[in-house]
Length: 113
Image (cartoon, rainbow, N blue to C red; front, side, top):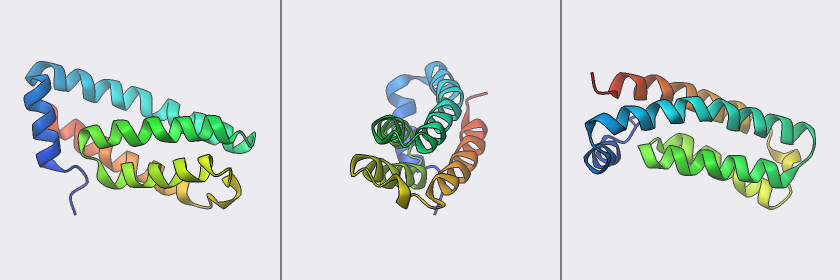
């Protein structure tokens, strides 16, 4: 399964234009580590609401680019935050971070030259 769904990505590229897609990718790559850091800190502080919001943002942003695995992992974490079950996150946050690293690599390769 591709890390980035190319049909979704191409659709976004068509809608946003060649120039703007690079900006969108850069913004996502800049924002995602902040969201991950927020989730880690919320997890440590047992702040389910902040955790849920950061997971929701990650899910939405990942889905925009067609990073489906990343979006799915973020969605699972969002639900745990919503249900106030942060104690059940286990390795999910680490898995999401790994999925982000893969998505970031592929998005950088997809940037218009």
